[in-house]
Length: 445
Image 1 (spheres, one colour):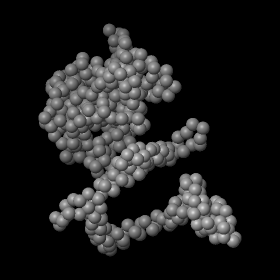
Image 2 (cartoon, rainbow, N blue to C red):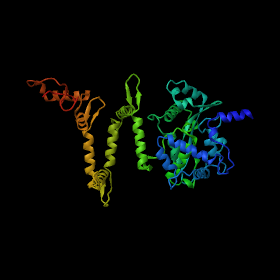
Image 3 (tube, helix red, strand yellow):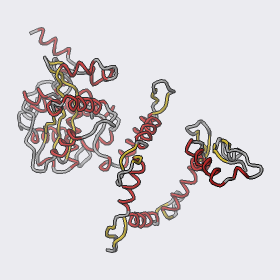
Image 4 (cartoon, rainbow, N blue to C red):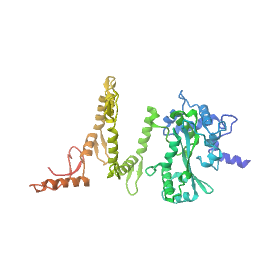
């Protein structure tokens, strides 16, 4: 008896889950409310999370949330899902596993609206896990360090997610190419998919499973589905959900929540990371380098010739924007023309200016743009320039091998080298007095 009490007191998760005689829940509502409020206090998207969890009065009604959770679960009035999310035992991992799904019968029947909150679980044979654990890169990841060994199988932390079409979402996990994904969960899935394709045994669907745990008439809209997914995520906490730190979808957020999310992304992008053998750079710069490298890869174009991804995207965009669609007045116009008319109409609207007078949106937009471009900022090459100067540098700086070959071909084609006073092309600083470090490869004038 004494040893059991000692184990319960030693478990930090058990401390937040106490027994109750309330039929609605085995966890006191006040303690559940405290879990949610503590989660909101430290969450990077607290405004978005509060928006989804609140009722129409803007209040977090924990009783209503628990009731919706119970009604949409596999076994209403059994409280099994609530216990699985909040009462993670001493010998249990912090996240849901296949064993939780099977032992507590958490998999629910999908409603006709196909909306669902789902759990992605990862169950690996010990041999696969050991290969990953011995990998110099994988073994450093938190998702590997927090793995839970259970006999011949190993459980890795998956995620709790939401979808408005469970069948499509589950198929996408199995068909998706994860090679370009950078988050830890996607990297693990990419490795497992590669191992599965190499072995030819097609076991990826056995290792990675997607289970619906909430579905019903109470989740008819996207917002209601996100609400229940957010509630489940906060109940199990960041240690139990790989997707804990992202909430909802951007188009559903309020202006304040969108601003908060934008500030979070900017702050994240400014963090410094170290590249092997190179200097420290920001995450924004690293992402730009990766994107540039990706977009310069050669792929097969529509006519069979090899072109870059940039060129392929430009071709596809041109085809899309050249499509004929019905305009506001019923006439057939291109998407480009429709966008132009919509933008012109928007920018012609009269709104209140900084001084209280009514002005066009275009006037304010132009004024803000000019003010921003007049500001002197330290650029990526370490030189301080205004926006106007940087524009000139971007357009005219070119000392690449391609530029050199173009100038050399021009010299050869025009026989300019035979004229008196000819000097060979060289790298020069153009307009050095006005625009710092504007480098060009060209002919002296």
